[in-house]
Length: 480
Image: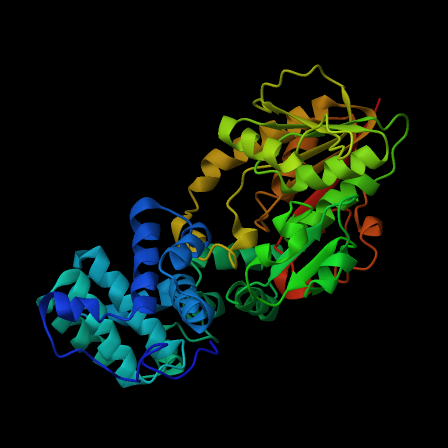
């Protein structure tokens, strides 16, 4: 549960509610709640991502400190637990939720999160949310919001779950889907990936609902983790280049502001480091990042390659993403800052490079993003099981192309930010079943500090086990 203070809103007395009408009434709407509402609307209407919308919105409205923290928790928490709150609201509204105006439904969700997921006094949560409803939708919808939220406030979250969720001893996955706010198909996929251990499934779901900390990466040759720690971060758990910020704007760290460090989850760092550390036979001069956008892993690999006298080719099918990679890598011709990498806009399934060209290949395939739900809370409600129908053939085609691109004796790292078995072992096994020129390499010895890596030879990272995104890595060696 959030640590937000018990108050009507940051910066005004608890429970204060304007008695005026019209423009004067709307002008008194709590700016933190209005900011959270606007984030939800942009996510719902434009399929934007909250982590991209919220920071510039906070800056534009001059919200900082406790106000920014309140707006962030209200927006992110509402998006994370949207499924649970919709079940509660459906029990309190006398019509299907689909019949409500989408903006009014978002206001109700914000109120439900304050009542059930934050330490906000009930009268303050209801009155301030009604103020938002009146400002964005008018007096009639505001009366509806007032009535519905008063019904929501009759029970706490545990009581609503007890009333609405299937009994745990009858349908544990269904109970967890509602209580931990995940679509059932995602809960079932996690259960399959975790061998049916319901307790661990619950731990994985809870980890998805915890706001992640900001992990930084010191770019090799340009910064160090020690420099980031000296600037106020703490050391990362696993990667020698990682440091973790307790809060605040990453750009307050000089190395980040100057481009010598960046923001990158430790799981993403680890899979790139494992590929770079995998043993090879023969030369080690030409590396490829086949789906490189927006450039985090490519930047790390390019620095590691340059330190060995190797070069990286980074490719992405979309031109705008290739440009992001180029910006992240910097100038490859700058002798004072050798990036060790070049960028091309190219489709990895129909590549311009000849077969058997590279010594190391990273293929971080497009996926459902189930491994980063804690960072993109809206994704759990936006994705559908049918998305796999398009993703799986693409993932198989990209892995097959990566295996064609690597020379005999070289290594391919198949990576996806998902623990869904169809996207991980399913793709790996499906591609390998049609080839006799590939062997699997045990990735676990390349990550010796990490516990609970399973039976191998592949590696699945987990937020609840390792504190990282749920990254999957399979290392594959091309045979002669």
